[in-house]
Image (cartoon, rainbow, N blue to C red):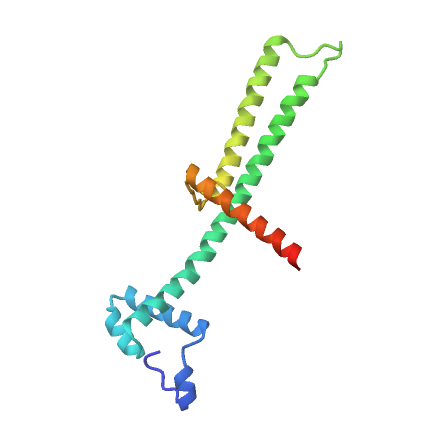
Length: 180
């Protein structure tokens, strides 16, 4: 980097900065200089590389910064969804327990109480489904799938031609088997 007075031999100079860690660290340097308002042409000149190389190094540094952040965010969101799903499952289990509970006289809940409990349970199940949909979207499970399809159109004449070819190949195979 500019300002370093390290003396390198010819082969060391030739390979300096070619490892991924070196390129990434130089990309970090480029990012810091860009944040200070320096133009890419000047930064590349200071580093002794072309402008496209400087952009490539900067891109490596950005990729190294962004990917872990996204993975950390996804893991954090999945943990939050797990906690909420567990809470909703507890509520659903509590509703189920209330529906089967009997009082001291052996009576179950009243009809109005059953309707209230079932309504609450349905709400909890709907929320649980929304959590599952959110998790699928967060983890890319709903992403569209690309399908490469080849369609061939074959008319009646093509089918007849294919049949003639198959028959002649079968006849040739029989003749060859008979001659050999």
